[in-house]
Image (cartoon, rainbow, N blue to C red):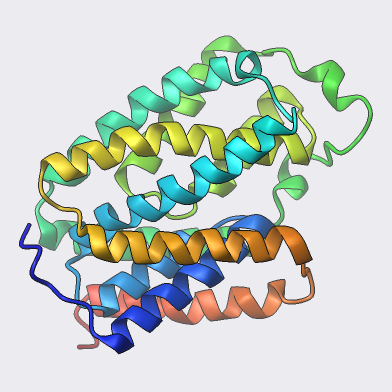
Length: 262
């Protein structure tokens, strides 16, 4: 990929700002890539390059968050083992397909995926899995269905490797539904899984020359800053308004990808 695509000040501000908002959103629930991918697209990146470059920020934010949770003893590596391997294998397969796909086809696929993932912004994972924030959560942390666990996390990993946007919601539902962990541990394990498979997915996209590192690092710095703000202040009142901002951005992006708007 030609690395001469420079950032002007307006693009820099837009990408950095989208990163801050996305990092904040991800601490509340997830779905930050539904904002960062559109920001990269409107900065002039092709859809395949935006999808690849977004992984730089995903790795930065997820690794930082997972490391902080690990330092506080929220989870153990043993607890994460059953989900890590299938998610990793799935992500490699998804990333390889995304790196090879015709950009015109990917435009349509990404537009459809973004619109479909909007639906996940309007329900809480606890509404699907049941509220796991209770004392019995730790007693239900064994693997209930090994084959279902492998299949589920392979599929989630595949989706995450392919496009990433909204994968946090899928992981929350999968981890709570199959392991019964409370939401704190679930979010910590979500970050660990995403950090691991995203490193390898990023490597694949980099090998194919689809990563613009300057754009990715700027976005990543915004993500980390937004995450710190979200963790520190935990402002829940702004969730509904933020969701509508994402809705507007995603709808406009889908229309752009479909060629309806310029």
